[in-house]
Length: 101
Length: 242
Image (cartoon, rainbow over all chains, first blue to last red; front, side):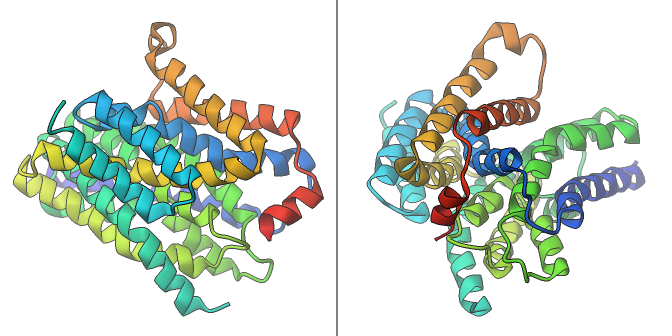
């Protein structure tokens, strides 16, 4: 039993890291195709947006505090705060709000 | 380019990632314990895999004594987005970046590490990514280990607050470019809306897609639509790189 758990973990490690590394071994230069270029430009923003919402509502004990963190985070980022301040602000909002909700 | 400085900047940006990782990994560890993992297995598995949804999926397979081929399938489905992320990163390097540094950067890719790396202004210095990786992954691995050892000791309120650290960072990555480029803002808004619908509408929930699969499908769909509606011109790319 113990033995096979290690095999599960080994397969998990190899498969996951191959997925990460394969594109970087295959694609060495700049992609010239304008559509692919544009597509790849949007990928990071879209994928982070999709992963943030509605997941942030489920990450907290109450969806209300998650929603508040999202809104204040957007306002703070719009105002020009960096990664760390926005991140801490979101945590603080949840921590304080969950005294009440 | 000063590699030491880039590494230090990476350490700094990696700190909030590390906090969020610890909280999330802790709850992952609690779950891994139920699936029968030892603290050492959790530590090693997390240190070298670093994929929340992927690990969660595999640990449930461990519990079910599933066959090994389904472990591969699980990793592919839950982590296929890394394929897109690494492809996007391949375009972010300066042309003279050595191949082994590119591959090491690929090894570091997680949602969060990718997020901060792609937000790096100008061509990516791999050492920035390594810095963020160096501080955050030990927290991910030890969070899992302590979760397995301790069960649910961290108060729920603390976990709750820490777990939005990651999302706060995502927000800080996607909003500023949206301010400059309306197409990005619209793509982000579309991402929020469609992701909400896909995760909450019974019609789509009944299809039984994992959240990883939904992420991939929506990313491809929205990014392709944005690429068609608002293609990038060489001038715009120049602007974004400066």
